[in-house]
Image (cartoon, rainbow, N blue to C red; front, side):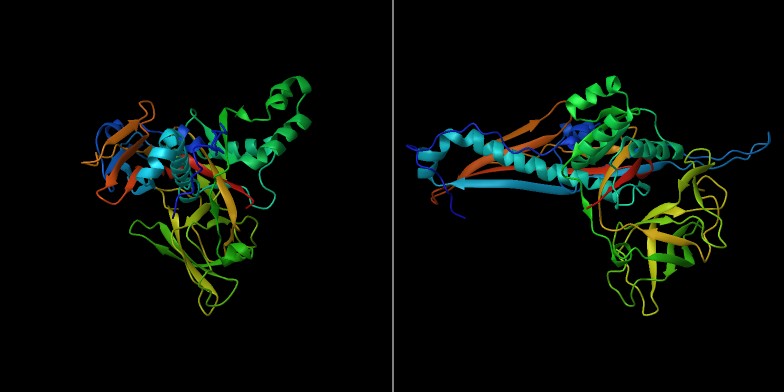
Amino acid sequence: MANILQSVQTYQDSALAYLQNYSCFISTANTKFKNFDKLEAQLGSTVGFDLPTRYTTTNSLVANFQGTEQRVHTLTIDKAENVAINFSAQEFILQARDYMERFGKGAIEELATSVESDVALNCETGPYRFYGDAAAGLNTYLELAEALSLFRNFGAVQTDTKGYIDDTVVPAIINSGLAQFAPDRANKDAMSWELGNFSRSTWYQSNLLPVHTAGSEGINSTTLTVVSTGLDANGAVTSIVFSGANAASDADSVKLYDRFSFDDSVAGQANIRFLTFVGHKKSKNAVQFRATADAASTAGQEVTVSLYPPLQAAAGRDQNISRTIVAGMQCSVLPTHRVGMITSGNPLFLGMPRLPEEVPFPTANKTDPDTGVSMRMYYGSLFGQDSRGMIHDCIWGSTVVPEYSMALIFPE
């Protein structure tokens, strides 16, 4: 594509600021893996980190020795992007040279937004629990408080709680606070129209939250009925066959990351609940899960959904639901929605390591010492081709620990 540059005689630097996106995910992510910051890395580099171990108690003074499973989560550098620009020698000397800082700034802004939106995808791909129905949305302080209460009821780290919400709902939430609270207590919110801290959580707004496009069952608000379950080697449910699909032989029946919730008050069925993550006690959280693959319905309008997390009713350290899943239970599926999340304990990890020098081209790597976020710039010319190029690029990977997070559901 040809460059469109203004002549030197008429071009004036307008000093216009760049159109900004919120970058709350990059700025708040956990970047503790300093080896990634200091070492040159390539795509595919992986670091593992340990998760808390799980045990069960015995109602006796007689010891019942149990094995220890060291739980591990991994972060893999699997994304790469660049912004490349080029000029002819004449363009560079007469028109572009004095404005390379601004051109570079524009390239970095674009690259940073791409990284931010990718890290935000963890809201969709990580949590299996969720709050909200994608219909009315979350637009009051009461709903934020309810989401936090369910998040903590399941079990949560009591520090570093963060909420990532759709920026367009903030005015309605602030307005709800002005209506509910005494004026003196609402002055700060009223003047700033920003959420900040509420209910021991820091709230961040984003205009880059991912949109999940649901399968036919979610789009049509289908109620699915359990027919049978598929178990893994430990007896945990890892797939469920449902009847009542919206249409026969529908290739789009269920999509990857569709979110399901077991319904209450189903005739002949007792309600089912998650157990607390630590202690294995019955919580107030409905049992929810996300699909781990696309699924098509059969000619008989049945669909088999592979799910996460594995749902285990048998007693033991991996038990996480209050009763066995049986035929006749019913599930609802979320429609298409925009998704944020709540986290605590800094479980959103981001790695952006240094890239190697691009010999023989002059190369600069800039790494933020506090966050470990790194970008590379290198430039050069094509010999005899009258073309000078500049490339800004980076590699990164991110992940969130599912049990330390909960999705927040907003209308599309």
